[in-house]
Image (cartoon, rainbow, N blue to C red; front, side, top):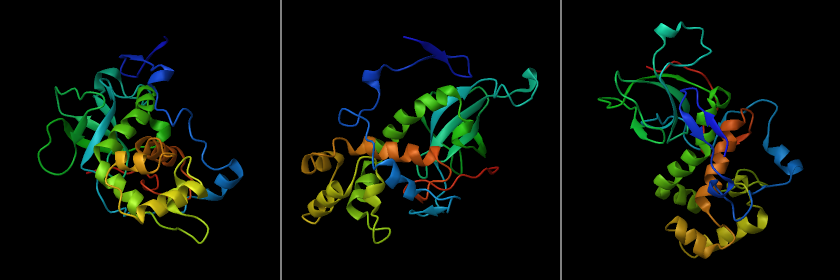
Length: 243
């Protein structure tokens, strides 16, 4: 098995195909390419279907760089440790500065909100998908899935409350692998009673093999594509200095 290294110099063992998230035996292709193009806009519309006012209070560690970035032009003796992470409300990608002597563990969930923080000194800045290190990029799909499962109630609520965006497009259709037929199966089933859990969804909608994996894949799509037209779970990308 080929072993890669993150920018931290830490050996990074790539996962085998058997360990990667599966989507019912194959990765969902979603809608045909011609149909999916209609979801894109020449410029990002900034259209988020959830409130954009929520500030991240917790983040999941994607990578730890003990000497910061290797390409920022700073002399080696001046470099400070840096953490790349993703928030768990709006899935904001960001760089954090850890407290002196603290080494946050990859995949750890750390507090970055107001008040006392145990691991993080401050949020340095928001970053984009292209700014992620190799290690962070490899971790992202698995951490997004863990984050979705950690907030199961929130995402089950999404299935219960998802609605039409236009006369021809429903929020459920933006999820990978969900077309008109499966969308109507979900809508018809929830009329009989709200879904209670991911397990409940799987049992009542057998064609939806793993809702958490499907949601995580959609979030990853939104993070990768700056010009995606509709955002179910993320906010439009922008760089900002955090306080």
